[in-house]
Image (cartoon, rainbow, N blue to C red):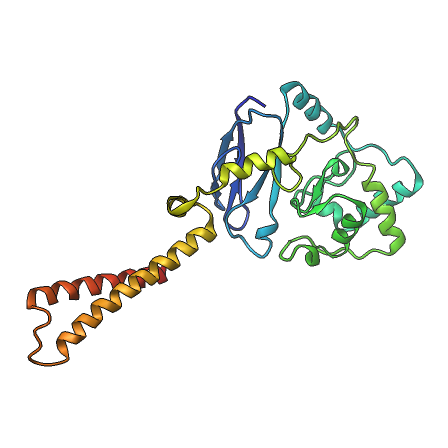
Length: 287
């Protein structure tokens, strides 16, 4: 909190856009190109972020949280984060750890203090300390974790994580071991500053910030995608009506050879305006 933070960004397969609206604008992440983003949080709390570039089936379920804490609290958290996983406290947890090592879990995930050194999926050394799993798709509890292990693609279509079929006893042992993986002396989570878990006053303040001004000026200056779509629809119909009136005037002139409703110069001007209007309608459809 109160310090500039620079984050290195890399994409492995498709284009993503990192967006934490309360901290920074959008930043594209393109495969093969290293990028960085710099921001500073001036208020302690948890700030929600989202992928803002369509990147596949799971795009709408790609979120993250940025936790801002005073420097001394952050240093304490970082020290705990560097600690290895504790030893299993009982036989059932040890059984769960052995199941983890014998499955594909250890090939994709790392758990410091064990032989699991996978680098494809998230590091699970302190997984029990997290509020959410699957990029903030699910609350981190025993039931959701079990469903995520058994059939992740039902809960999050498009995820690259593979299902892991385990007998019920082995699954329960694995869950028991994973519940023993918080950071030591883990403090209570900071209050969320946005999203559905935010305090009421914070949510109202954010809503007021993003609320469109009332009336016609508000419609023109709106940034909400639904309002912008309505604005395009209304504008298209207005231009369509104008083009129809111009076409009607020209066809009336051409209805009879001796018609003198429109002079030659005005006819040429109307013809040009009609063509320009129809091109605008074509351009709107293309966009």
